[in-house]
Length: 259
Length: 292
Image 1: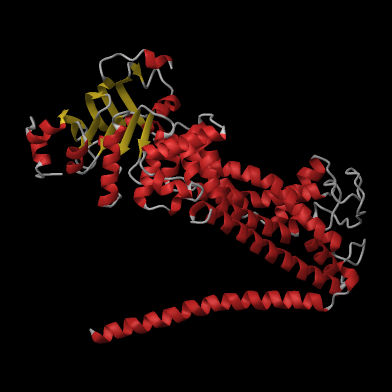
Image 2: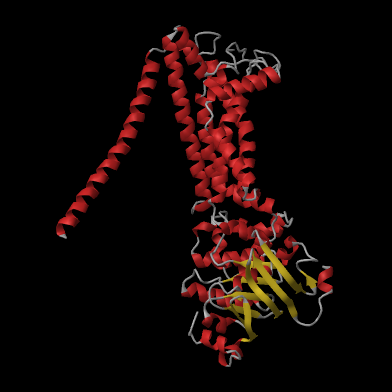
């Protein structure tokens, strides 16, 4: 709780400066400076291999799991350096992640959602029941799943699985949700459900979403950052970035001249 | 052109036939073998052979066999599963790990008679255990350890990487992820490894020749665990079914009893595989399917 009191009131959730990341000898992220605002949706766009997913994973230190990664620079979350002042477990408790492929555990719907809270020490059944219901409601999937809470999550459709994964992330009450191309494996109807959900969730959460789909960035995000070859070419208000890009490379990309 | 297509189709039909024939051959082989052993064994059986006598029956040997396999799994499952987890999740790729894998592979192809001699030297001579169930069980553990290790390692490595990422993503530690997500997802495959390991234990004779001795004098109802006639004393000499077959056949004593012991051993292995398979299928259905 004490870190909540110490939040500087500048409205920035993340303050990233001079971030460099290397996979062995490969310089994957180059000198990135960025501020990410609270309660907004920030979209990260760019061609494949430009570093947007890598960047996303530095924010909850998922890159720590990969061997041979070296990171320089600082990322501050609410003023605290996430690589020096924080434990990765504590960080991931506050920065949840939704992955490209829906990845429910081979457990029941209930056990999937209750997994995070249980890991963090909540054991009482009525408390878990409450968390499971609340998280599934927040993920707009309670009505579909309330009668099959104790059936395996592997039997759900792809779109349902992805919303279940969002519920699983919400169950540990993070402040920030990272989404790594969350709809790229889904059909258009499931995609629009996830997008509506993201818009609903930004009231309470800061969301950062990697997407290949530029219409999606326009539809859901407040801010957009354009990545190219490990650099941030441009970042700013989504509407402005897509209508009046200030860099010619951004314009080339969003008008489909490459990428 | 037309001829070429027709020829491909002929080859296709031919190969289909070949594969069906091979499958049928295996089925026929198993069926012929099992029915010969089981029918031949039961044909010469007398009622007292099924008893728990000191001599001339197979009851005690059957119990010894099951108890020995149980004891050996008690060692090989925890150690093998831990080693598999280590190799899949913790070992860094490098020379040391490759060497370790090589050691495990070598261990898995050791002749069981060599393992038996090794068990004799280590457990009997060095630790002074005396011929006992425990010494035999430990020798069988050495034989089956690589199998369980390898099955566990492969099972974990073949899981979708998303399970581990998702678990780490909600703030679990590596151990929590392994214990609560990866391992439960692997249970059906690890079970398969355990079935194979147990099957090997049931039939093992060479590794037990020097290690378990030939005790078959059990007093049912003797609960003094330190007594050599107490069935549950793991440090007593014990004759298993396979050793009994070997003893009877080499001494040319009671052929009918040896045949019955073979039949019972065969049935034991079959029943165990079928039961374990059914259990493992039930677990995997519970994990992945519609049924709760």
